[in-house]
Length: 174
Image 1: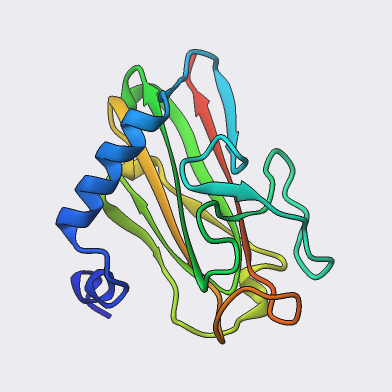
Image 2: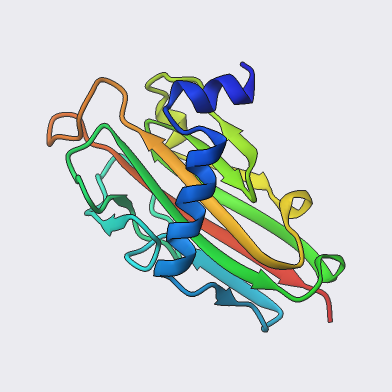
């Protein structure tokens, strides 16, 4: 599916994305990456995120917590994000994003689509989860990661759980 169409379909236009990034950057300070190895996992420090209990059906994600919408925890979607700074992209040995989502998601790194799931209830999306190479999407200075997670079948309830956990692993060269 065309990425522009998908973003429009979820009511998140390019202008809205840029406005969202601007609000996020005013609300949180980008994580300064100076160590050789860093893990950035979803938790309450992510913009728009509220930690939730992990459903027993979901894979446990080390270094991350399951989150959902801070402003509306029973919503059928959650938009959570973080930002971090990198010294130089050529110093990146590897960069990956592990994603576990009940039910599906769109993930943007610096405005570029990394994940664009079909809107279906796919248990493989949250157990065992998936790993994506995000190294080509990273740049020098500030990097933004936005996850738009969706709950298939409507609002998040006890009978229809929803959650997203993500872990970014970055390894720098010596």
